[in-house]
Image (cartoon, rainbow, N blue to C red; front, side):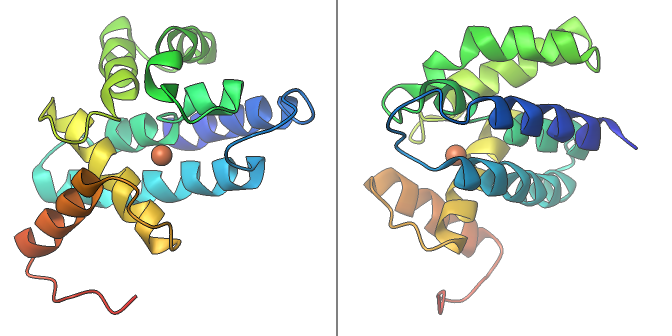
Length: 162
Ligand SMILES: [Fe+2]
């Protein structure tokens, strides 16, 4: 078992613990479970393409919506997850301090889709957008569509057929 699987198992436990805690959620806990694993897979592949550590990228993508998992709220969920994801990552005992900083910064900044951050941050943003689109989520902000189109053009992928 590698760190990605251990992290995701721990995260699934956290998600299970949220059952019934928040009255109304902007996304279902089932979505959080699926999107966590599926965006991690996208991140792994993007990281391989870009010469970035795929395990770290996939781990960062796995926890990127930690704030929304805890609060149930989409609004400002990236910032909301910053402190709590640091504690969670530390508790897993899977990561160095430096890795925790890299992952938690990617969590904090993943909603800033128009800005360019660290390679891990950029992979998390792209994986997030690609994964949501895969599941048929509409682009609710133009910068998400732009990011998706940019990724598509970069790899010479013809217009999506949906
Ligand atoms: Fe997301």
